[in-house]
Image 1 (cartoon, rainbow, N blue to C red):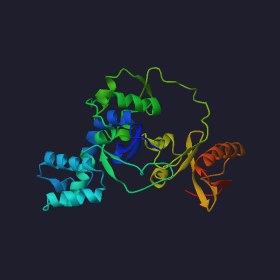
Image 2: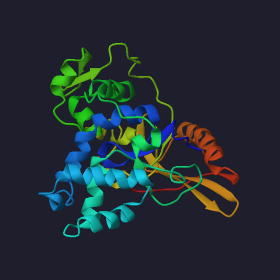
Image 3: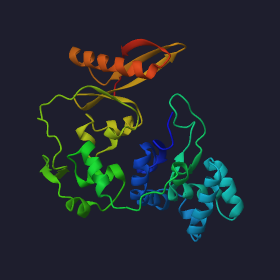
Image 4: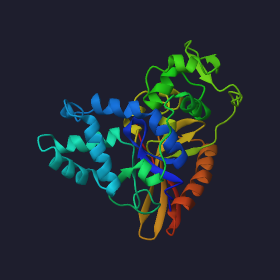
Length: 300
């Protein structure tokens, strides 16, 4: 079970739901507030429909409603519409979603369970205020620890934050250049494996950050047309590159892991995927009997 003081689900980067620790929630949400605000006013029609409103009053009222008790967006919209009947109620609710730090409460987010998307404020759920620090320096270093070396454009694509060039240059990072002359930044003491070091086979869930963490996705996608077709699908990597998709097919009491590679795999790669896939299936099958691993053919 996800305990409220350990992990929460909230809209974070790219205005999508992320599962983060409580500590990261209070630290990261203020830094990424400009992303949520831009998504409201620039990236959606909802921001245009609240033009001329007292946004401060809207935020205060919406926050009070959600701290009174957790509510769905539809429930919130109904109550906001009663308060401002001359405004589009859905737009009011989505304005709250973007402008107020919200978390989804259980049973949403519990392993093997689900439920309506019901939200309250992060502060009410965690019982503590969000951090006052809004500078992106620590967030940038966290990103580089996971995905560096990377360009400033990569960092901005991943986080949604803009204008980071000067911030990055003040952080005293190591710099490199790629084959096209782009400046790459990394942490001074980050590990630097030999370029010929093999990368183990790995299974990624849909929307994994490894697929979304760079502006130039050629470093993980093998074909130019793949990103648009495969974002949102569970995929697997061979030697660090995306080489196929996977899914677990459940039939009554049995579960089978099906792999659909984009091209012929070597016996060595199939063996590595089978070994790693067995671990995945044992973890995900739960009480269902693991019925083995099957390879199919997919043309992309």
